Image (cartoon, rainbow, N blue to C red; front, side, top):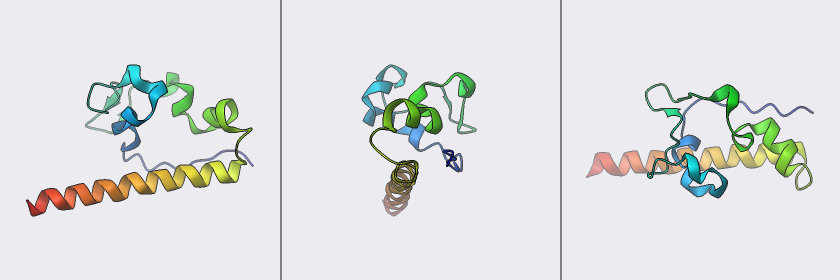
Length: 97
């Protein structure tokens, strides 16, 4: 199976890199990657992004000995869903205030 993560381009993972120590040099100070175009939610260095930001390369380089491809994809989808749940709650809380 080839790693094929279906990203919807929401940009939330790139807005929470403060939780990923190897990406600390990319953090603008508020958890947002300095290479994220915050208007389009697209990476400005997509074709030269860090290996950890590339699901397929990151798997081979860092996680292949820890997880099967299926487990790795499942974990990434779960993390993505959790970011979306937290974001939806924050937006909801902001509109109530």
